[in-house]
Image 1: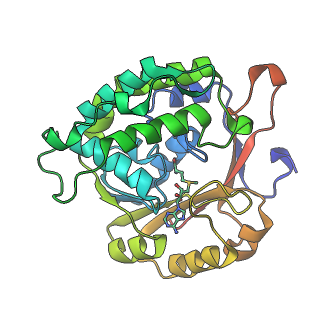
Image 2 (image 1 turned 180 degrees about the vertical axis):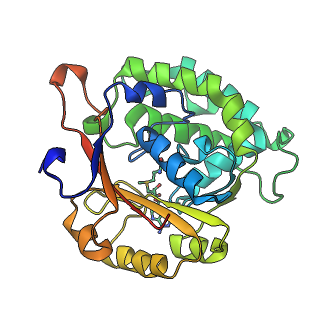
Length: 294
Ligand SMILES: C[S@@+](CC[C@H](N)C(=O)[O-])C[C@H]1O[C@@H](n2cnc3c(N)ncnc32)[C@H](O)[C@@H]1O
């Protein structure tokens, strides 16, 4: 089915709109990152009139980083990602230094480090946190956080060639991340960061003042440390039915399993497919289904 045949309201995002989204803050490449649909998420959030934005499946943080005028609760079950955002809160300048050194040390052609990892200084324990208001507790591992950014950015999450990016663009991408770090850190310093299963985070924050953005793992791709089975989507549906707050869930459109569980989406939108080699021709647009109670 093409977007023109869809029985639902379908809006094609005009070509070139991704150039606008390039102005959004982003930290690293990540499978399923939602940079291109941020304006649509922002729109629904604004209409909800809520101030607390709970990013239930936060991933690379691309959505949370760009929600303005909101109290952000970032959540992901993956402790590696949570360590990364805690490290940004704790000492983003050290993280920036480590990435800068990695930029020199990394062999962008071969996709591996040319200098041993022990050359990357491990001094976070003696540095003062850049976010004195941050939560006390065990200091995050800033060196591991730098490795996380490198791993995802260089190999697109270790997913191999299929989603690999060209060496030049990876290097340029990393340079941009380093230059964006002060702004990223400014935003992240205000976040509440959680490391909970989606059932627990929703239970913890559900209230009339909350807005939940839900970008669950895909039903047909095992991209994450933790992926979803049918019963996870069913549990999510049961939770959404009883939710006190507002929500927006975005998933791939025309997924039979998801449509059986969640029903017809409120609307579907088509987005230009940007994950492609320009020489291999145009790919069909990506169809995203939006479910919301706003
Ligand atoms: C589609 S990705 C989210 C991408 C994110 N919106 C972004 O822009 O980067 C889904 C995320 O859900 C996380 N996840 C998987 N199972 C989870 C669970 N049970 N509870 C919370 N998060 C989970 C994965 O680690 C992954 O980062």
